[in-house]
Length: 101
Image (cartoon, helix red, strand yellow):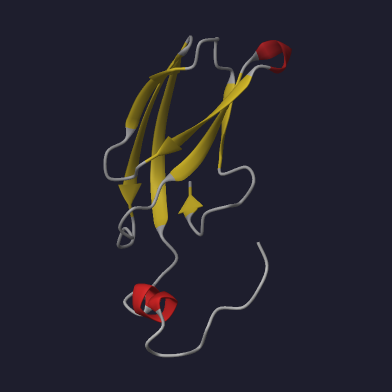
């Protein structure tokens, strides 16, 4: 999507975004456990967690199988990928402003 947002102070867009302030790039320490097709994820925040943030996690197996799941850092996640998971990548497309180690 392209275009410009209205700069009018009373516009719905200005009202919807006027309360958002980042004081630091959201940072997390990850704990990921792979056990066959089951993946358990926990994230520990190093900075304040923005409300509603979800971070993509790509799960990959052999023969090109992959699945992307969304992780809420405040809840963690346990999922069955449907294939044996060999590796994972946090936010491979860089769609979320966050740092995950």
